[in-house]
Length: 234
Image (cartoon, rainbow, N blue to C red; front, top):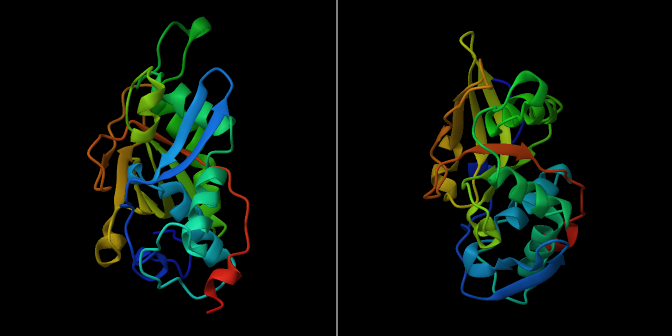
């Protein structure tokens, strides 16, 4: 199974899960939406945790072993800042919202075809995710869980970090991910599974990510490195 050498959630993941007190994080203005809450911490800081884990891995630093940080500490502030970075404002919010309003399967006729989430996941996004992993880099994924035109539902989506995959002759794809919602003791067994043979049709994604909603599709989140060395200096 191709995987990122030296990366396992049980080793490289954070020692705490994505569960936080009810604390404000940041509200931003997104064209067409107005004020959007990127996070109340109680809704999760998954994107910041994912980016932090990749930052530390790319820097070849020892994994962070801190307990869950309190608001206002350097580690907490770093996670919040990386959460904001993971949304690539405003384009990231618009991508989540666009996918939330896209059908699961292709629609229309050949000359007016609208690609569904299955094709967008498999045809547009998976090759770049696969290339990241093959090159030795964990790949941040945006997980779309809902079909909704309500911007308030943006917070029901999720972010994980793909680090390995397996594709068999029948085109069954298994993607292994670090899930910030799953504790480190069980982290190595978290996966997404789908058949990629005919993505023009609805393509169910089975998973054991620690979220209540189904997964409709996923996309690669652009990533830029930030040096986390100050967090591991103590």
